[in-house]
Length: 44
Image (cartoon, rainbow, N blue to C red):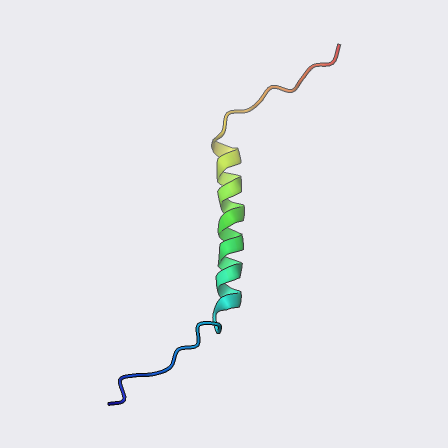
């Protein structure tokens, strides 16, 4: 009967947010790497 144990869902919140921020930064860098280069506007 000891198979049930309490899990606190808030214990790993900091780690989850850190992994989420790292994932989003890497996603932005990947999109910028894959996208074609844009031409700079020339001033006349």
